[in-house]
Image 1 (cartoon, rainbow, N blue to C red):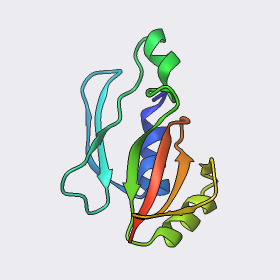
Image 2 (image 1 turned 45 degrees about the vertical axis):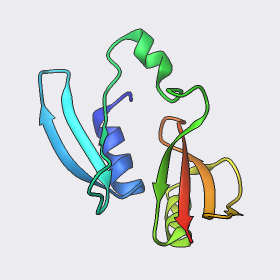
Image 3 (image 1 turned 135 degrees about the horizontal axis):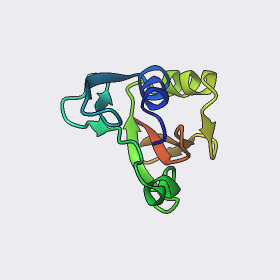
Image 4 (image 1 turned 30 degrees about the vertical axis):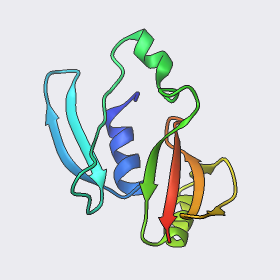
Amino acid sequence: MRDYDEALTYFTQVLRFDLIEDRQLNADKRWLVVAPSGSTGAKLLLAKASTPEQLRHVGDQTGGRVFLFLETDDFWETYHHLQSHAVTFTEQPREQEYGTVVVFLDLYGNKWDLIGRR
């Protein structure tokens, strides 16, 4: 990521994640951890790029593939919430055997699946 506060705002307000930990490690580095609301397992460390090489990969950590899944109990409510925050979707929601899914881009352009399981 490029900026701690920008990422924290996105993850807590747009994706509605919980802030788990925010600790200043030194003048340039924070330990910033978020998790999907109510999650007892998955957490994300929001790490700021610290070299030009790392900065070049922000938004393309996986070479353009979906690499994170965000599951929701109410697909359509979450989908409309993301729309209201100008989140970019790369497709229209589609039905799969496991539920409803749509690919969206996060703040930096990484691809996520939003999934509402049956």
